[in-house]
Length: 390
Ligand SMILES: NC(=O)c1ccc[n+]([C@@H]2O[C@H](COP(=O)([O-])OP(=O)(O)OC[C@H]3O[C@@H](n4cnc5c(N)ncnc54)[C@H](OP(=O)(O)O)[C@@H]3O)[C@@H](O)[C@H]2O)c1
Ligand code: SF4
Ligand code: SF4
Image 1 (cartoon, rainbow, N blue to C red):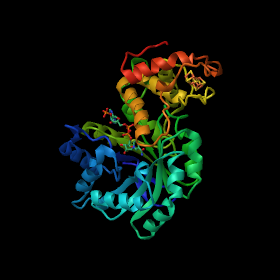
Image 2: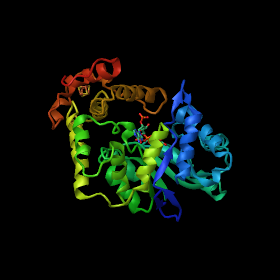
Image 3: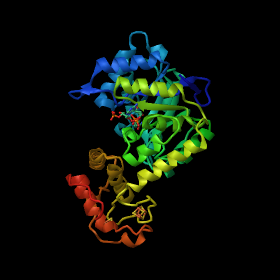
Image 4: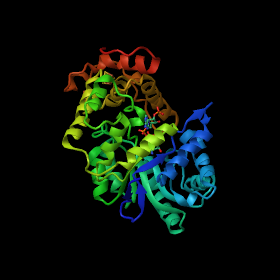
């Protein structure tokens, strides 16, 4: 196993971290026999960091990790979990969730505590409720080791959060397809330049890059060094000096064995120029599979009816590019859930489009947006077949 220095601290963490969000399941519950073998294999091969969170596996992940670590393994790993930002309604909730998490995890100390999934709405909410003073008290008491946050939003929301506190670390969605999405490469470099440890999540885009379509597979097949698609995706991350650790959510023992093997070969700046060019080719090849040539420039925004045009197009495209129509439909359904959970205050789905056409003339790609929107809703919201034109 390779180890890397954790930000400004002298702690050495394994290049591969165990993401406790994708355990194998049976009848909707974690399949604990295999999940135990998976975690044990990872620990036996040098993984020393486990990342869980309050909602993973409907709350089962923290409890399972707590049971797994309870027989003397707790001291062997760095344990990370996250405050569920969206459930916080008042300052007393900080203690309420923290203590519940410690109980679930059978520990008095969380080594790395994150504010979960910060975005432009939840960071100001938590900040104004006094989360930093609360967390600093917990750090002074020795209950929290280091404070960080995970991030999901557009890149413009990242820097203000990074600059909002002297964080020890952050966790960002990053992979060779997301160089300009979410925090992106710019966010990675910015956080690292401030001395923060940067933990990577969704390195294989939640599994989307694991089983590539033929044109992308041909790129990997053409490489002198033979690696599978996941190994290439992981090596692209470890190649970057700003990356502290790559979290992988693994759903079988075989995946753990493969990814541990990949991590053993992980080196900074070890990919050749030819190899790096393959990732650009893979990205371009994936992008050519998008039915809608949207670049997410947002020139068409705002829509007078609140439709988030680039987000809807992004979800639609992902379903086709990665052959994951069900995943795209789930993401679209999540936009309705956001309303129900109070995460969003307005419906930004394609369903809200009234086909007024105000946006059409603003698109530099000349996308007939008002014609696409009903199609996007029919496919993602009503389960119709994918269309390649409106
Ligand atoms: N803080 C947040 O907001 C947040 C959000 C997302 C994730 N996370 C954390 O970050 C961790 C990593 O993210 P992620 O789980 O999305 O990671 P990921 O590595 O992008 O996706 C995990 C999926 O990739 C596939 N995979 C992994 N290794 C493979 C292999 N060797 N061969 C074939 N397929 C492989 C599996 O898909 P199949 O199961 O389909 O085989 C697995 O479930 C999570 O587990 C979680 O701890 C945090
Ligand atoms: S056509 Fe639809 S997406 Fe475009 S501005 Fe009108 S309501 Fe918004
Ligand atoms: S203007 Fe066109 S390319 Fe830009 S976000 Fe809107 S639809 Fe996408």
